[in-house]
Image (cartoon, rainbow, N blue to C red; front, side, top):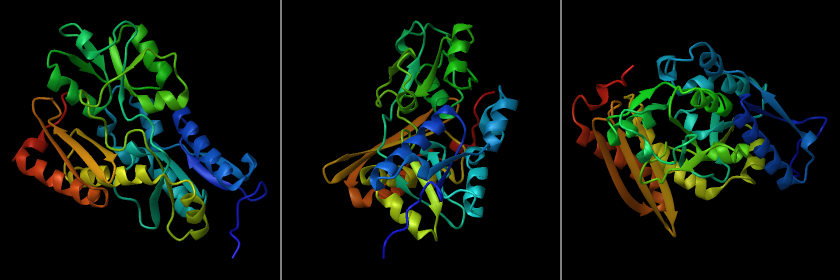
Length: 321
């Protein structure tokens, strides 16, 4: 049976947020599909969907997004459009994705992963070690806040959100001496102009799934599933299976900074995980390897081990406001 492909008269609708990075990721998805099936760009339509998180980010500029609703803030409306048939696929930054999808939706396609590292961004400093005692650091990430305070409790961390240009202006205005972004986002946006230095993973373990793009679809859409299989990156999927299993076992019952990174080496997978108190006063970490096929199981077991080591009260802390 010949596979029915999208066309300019019946395009595949790609749902995305409207930020520059989200659009860049949607365009990358479109371009890979177009190349895989020798289709014109007109066979795809990019549909911009405003999410609750986009509105919240504008309204509550100085409040952590976790206080407003968490990760689902940036996915709910997009997934509703996918379930209703308003779009055919949804493109997401995987570090923003909840570990559970709504009934009827499947997330099993990943593009090749970008640079997983965090970026230290400052107009006149090149590393965390260059910051003076008591320096003001801007970040909206609970993970980065905790990691910073664990290593440098002398620092003062303030809420710091916005697109790349907004954050650079805040730095220029002296709101903070530095901030942090994902190297993957800067690379995808082609922002070589940003004064950024990549932070080694051993110094700041990245967020689970950082640098990965995921594509969500309806479970009963067989034709779209067949198309997406052509652009799925297997190694990225194997790494994320371990990382997201680790996150799922931790994140379902606690609100705490979590970092995790899986890497492949031949037939083996190495998983590093870290959980911290939000004030940075304590960090627990683990580092284990296993056959690639056992990655998800290792993620679950590592999370269970860290939970056992944490003891009562570890996950009851909240980040200082």
